[in-house]
Image (cartoon, rainbow, N blue to C red; front, side, top):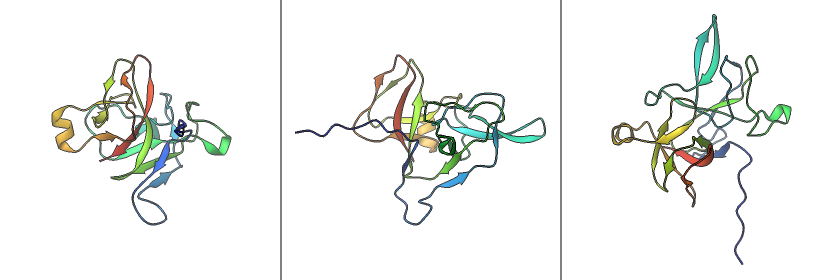
Length: 160
């Protein structure tokens, strides 16, 4: 009898790094900027009206560090509850080997073992050959890949 695999209900899925932090740096001192953020989005800090705030990562190629918005567990929020302006964001910066439950937009066609990169709106898309070669990419993890995506879809990604 096969065991059914449940869909993850958390963004941070772990890492291969030993130690207490597991290669993960948690950040919880900045708020969401004017653009809403959904848990699982790639995010970046920006200066907005003189204060540091998070926004969805807005470049398809320039990733300095992989920072992901987590679900707001302290308020019993789920991975589907978006952050709104000036709401404190739970985030983590990941290193190579860390796995997270990210999002890809409608219209993507993702296969198992594809490299992924930022889509420029917090989500991910299939990486170009030059982006994958530059190491600013993620790989699909797990046994499944969504294939042709007709709605925004979540998938397990591993930081390279």
